[in-house]
Length: 380
Image (tube, rainbow, N blue to C red; front, side):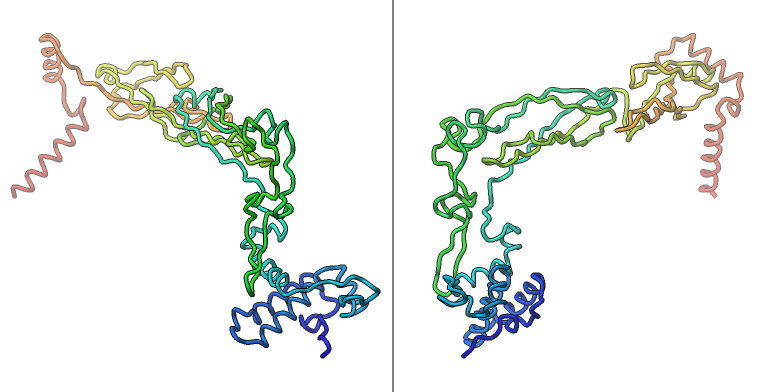
């Protein structure tokens, strides 16, 4: 019985592109897969034909030979005396798994690609700074315990810097295949662990790992305006990778210690400003410190009340990656005198007797009037 045309088997035209061939193959292979048709010998035979057709047409050289000589191109001694090609079912079935599931199982590496050496792990370093350092920025030196590329072998893992060689078990593929009855099983090479390469003469210092443990000193630049939780990344300063693989990154997480005077909210600063009762009543000037080390003069108006807020524009924190600054807010905390002498007590009593409370304490007088009205309403 003559073989069916490979193009007819895949239901595509002779001018079909590689993508069209792949799409047709996937669709037919899923339909006729033996796992979906248990015990159906016709489906199994069809599945073999589909796999055989696709294995030829997806290869440019094989496809060109087929277009010229037909099936004779792949028969022993046919089609111009070539040695022929072997289309055993076992190898074809493994190809179907690569085509249908390779992107998921292998991460797009392809049939012959191993995992390769792993990238180094990222590291975290916690650093606490003061509010002043967050305002000005700073340069800090830190010591980080880490693994680094071995100096004697320069990270190759081989003695005197010798390069790894192809694994003799998988021949550099990183994978090995074995036949188990109807199936061909592909697994990671046990010799090279998927790297595809081995070290025949290991470096005596790192024993072939290509890495050694060591504390390294680094200089970190902290820009002005950083906030709590800011993360700084130092690329390539993490753990060293496997042989030939890049190192991981170092991430520095910043924490800002509490300040004895200022409270921070974004780029703005807040400070409680105690002032004497006499200054609040008569007015005056007071000097307050700013985060940049300067002093600001605050003019207290006559009759300043407790809780009054003063805004010092542009005297707050630096803004990250900007020349701008936030504001500083000062909240008046009027202080009531304590430990009065007899003379001071008499002066206050004379002041109270000679003054109209509604004039010098309008807010408290208004409040007491409201309290009185409320009590009277309850008594009715």
